[in-house]
Length: 534
Image 1 (cartoon, rainbow, N blue to C red):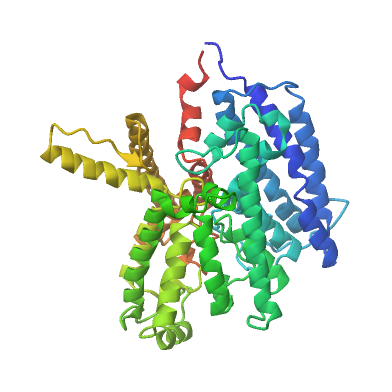
Image 2: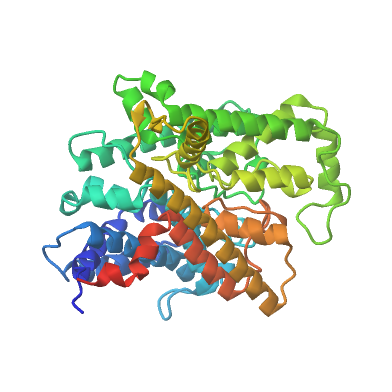
């Protein structure tokens, strides 16, 4: 058997990406210097990453990227950056022998599996955490900012960024972006794919800066004293990539209603196709509201928000007794009971915030929804499978796939009643190729199969170690990691975490986050003999 894939070219390009990953490490390094914290975790990571990057880059001086090499390169890149992302956590927890002592030896990220989990969750913009204590007493501000920055880098895509700035990736850039970008496809905005990548990142950066400015304005005006410059930047870095990491243990609940209302439209924007923003900014604003996927996306958000608002407005929306050992206690439950049921603005804000957060897979929380009764929780579980738009930073199955599936179901009903009729499925006024429709059905089926297999494996491991986990907790943990959502229910809820899972379960969820971010197929195809054979 002869190997058809030029794997050396893929590995070489991974090295190119790693070399330039040293640049964003300068940001937390500067923050560490500003706050008087140790810069060693970032200096060490920069040296290690740069050295490994140079070595790998020299494996193939003139790499030729074809579709097969592109698949391998993207898959390996996400593994490589996850390992790099874990290094600052490990150095903070262990130090470097004979050079510097540990900064926070009690950190939960001292465990390499936990460090890899947190790093993969960051770069894939999942937002699931194993930090345990989320505070500056357990982690430095610079390490926490690195945690936020991993999500911002992973949001639009590490490889998309590399295509935008590295000339050696421009030739095969289209294949690389198609493999990495979330959704069925990516719209070419300019004649050159590198210019398209830069356009997407410009829109992404611009929205991030605007949100940070608006949030910090709340601090300047005295509306929200908690929204310091650090918090404003941190939440802008994790809103636009639909990431959800927060330096606050209570997530966005720690901030004012005004801050929550500002974050909502930016989460909606993060779940929108960024190509639409580029079109609107370059003289074609009608494209935004003429886009059928965008209108369907807003309609789904509005419908789910209306249902959840009605549930929360009801006096029966909250659980009666908080579960023992949970994240909801009697005092918190009583504070919600006096503030939300029967009050329109809090009910609407909580419903809209959580629906947008879950559908777009951001994963923020402005309330601990473990306090909600089963109907509201299962509505959020359903929302985990929807996802953002194609070309957005959101995870999940993607709204455009559901839109096309519904249109094909409608077509089947019509052609059943009218067998002679020929009725193509249209998207944006253009007929879709039947092969593309079959691909959408295949992906959706594969996604659901992966979900059930993942849930089954987690259940088996929970039984093996004797873990006490409910069905809802199990299903939500699987959906939240595969769909890059973040929080689930119960102990993996918005104010909880994934720390109590066994190392085997954590490794499985690392894989789920990885294949979920790459939309399953690019990873699965690497496991087939046909991919490697001539």
